[in-house]
Length: 193
Length: 269
Ligand SMILES: C[S@@+](CC[C@H](N)C(=O)[O-])C[C@H]1O[C@@H](n2cnc3c(N)ncnc32)[C@H](O)[C@@H]1O
Image (tube, rainbow over the protein chains, first blue to last red):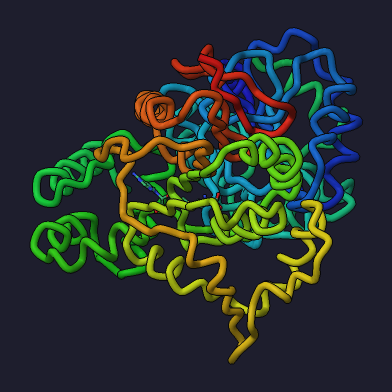
C-alpha cells in the first residue's frame, strides 16, 4: 500500500480539526516546506464569533501564503486556505471555493465532512485528507468519501491528541492509511508531490 | 450517487416547466441541497425525485424552499451594522427620501435590523425598505414581523455590539413565545417576490443589501446580478454584501470603492 502512495500525486491536501487541533497546527506548519506544490485547506471548528485573527496567527507560522477563503476564490498551489468561521466550505469543479451558510452538520459550521466530501468529488484519487484532534464525530464521513474516491486518509495518532475522540472514531470506522504524530505528519506532507 | 448529468436534467425540467433557472447556481452547494431533499422526502432514487418535480406542480414550492438556504438572523455580523450606522446612514441622511433594497432578504431579520437603525437615526419616516426574495413563503414571515422569542437574547447582544444603546425589547411585544416587531417598523417595508436570475431592475436605490445570496451563484451569474445592482443604484449609492463575499473577482469592481474593512462599497462612477 505504501508503495502505491509514493506514486500518488497530491492535488489538494485537506486538514480537519476540532478541539485541541490548533496546538498541532502551530507545531506542524513551521515544519512544512516553503514551496508546497499543492494547496492546503484547513477546516477547523471554532466559535462562530471568532475574530479573523486566526488566519493571521496561522500565517505567522509558515512561509507559505495563508489566508481565509473568500467566496469563488480560485484555488492556487502553495497557498494555505482557512475555512471562514460559520460557513461551510465547498469545492467547485472549476477549482474555485464556494461558501454555504446552510444548516450546521455534526453541530458544526464549517463541517469537515462537507468539505472533504465535496473535494473528493473534484479531486478523487489526488486528494489527501488528514484528521486531527477533536471531540466530535465530524470528519469520519468525509474521510470515508476521500478513501472511496481513491484518495489517502490519515489521522493524528489519538494517543498524541489532546482530544482523541475524532481521530479514534475515524480509525474505528474506515481503513485509515496512516496514523501520525506531528513530526511524522510533517515528513509525510513534505514528501507528497 | 447522483451524477452531474442527472442534476442537469432536473434543472432543465425546472426551467422548461416552471421557468425557474437554477443552472448557474454554485453546483457543489446545489447538489448537496438536492441530495438532502432526496433523503428528507425519502425518494428511493434520484429518478423518483425528478418524476415528482415533473408531474406534481405543487411539489415545486417545497423544492424551491428546501433547495435554497434561508438561514438568517438579526444584526448578523454586528461590525457590519455598526459601519452602516456610523458610515452609511449619515450619507443617506442628506437625502430627502431614502430607498433601500434587501435582495434575497429571506424571512426579514436583516430588514427589521435595518429599520431599527433607521429609526434610531431619525430617518425611518422618510425611508422605504424593499424586501425581495424568490421564495414567497419567507416573504410571508417578513410581512408578519414575528420571530421566536428565544432568539431575542442573542439578537439583543448583537444589537448592542452593533452600537445599539436602547432597550432592544422596546422594539417588540412578547406573546406566546414569539416576538412581534412594531408596526412602525413593518409599515416601512414593501414586500415583493423578485428573482435575481430572471427579473430586472425595478427602481433606483440609495443602498442595496444582498448578503449571503451571491455565494449560491456561480461567477457568471454573480456578475450578471452585480450589473443589475449597479444599474439599480443612484449616484454615490452603496452596495453591501455578506462578510465573505467580494467584488474583487467581478466585472464591476472598478465602479465601486470599498469603504472600510466591512463589505460595503460606494459607487464611484
Ligand atoms: C442565506 S439567505 C440570506 C438572508 C439574509 N440576506 C442574510 O444575510 O442573513 C439567502 C436567500 O436568498 C434567496 N435567494 C436564492 N436565490 C435567489 C434568487 N435567484 N433571487 C432572489 N433571492 C434568492 C433565498 O430564497 C434565501 O432566502
